[in-house]
Image (cartoon, rainbow, N blue to C red):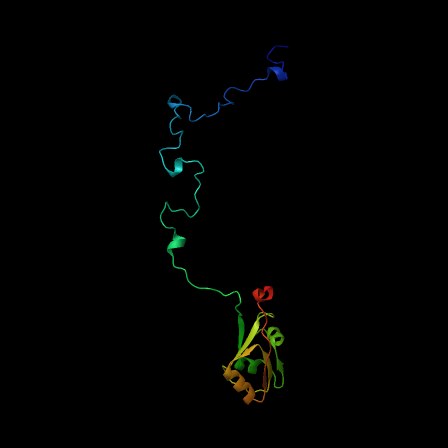
Length: 164
């Protein structure tokens, strides 16, 4: 057996070209990577920790700060589901009691836990007992003139009001 074929941990050699020397920057002008060490000239990009925010626009005022701001949403707002008396007339029989659960069941209101307001658009010919969180004046007038009854119930609290 020849010497080249004997493989031991003591005589292992890497293949030619498989191991490259480390690229050492800032080690003098003769190295080719001296002076600025590959970072170009002076300025922000030549400094360490040169990361910039994603919305950075070169010192120009960013778009998010140039656009106008408007609006405010109160954390205590109550969003009402709205139903007209004309809709109640077409979906309920005379003498029925109308509340939020009934309206959700019929598909007139989407959320069971929302506040309900009855508005006076349309005509009401049936005698209904309507239970809601709020009523418009015209809705109360139309419900009472049809022989029905408008009962105002306590409005549900918002999540923010529950925390307080």
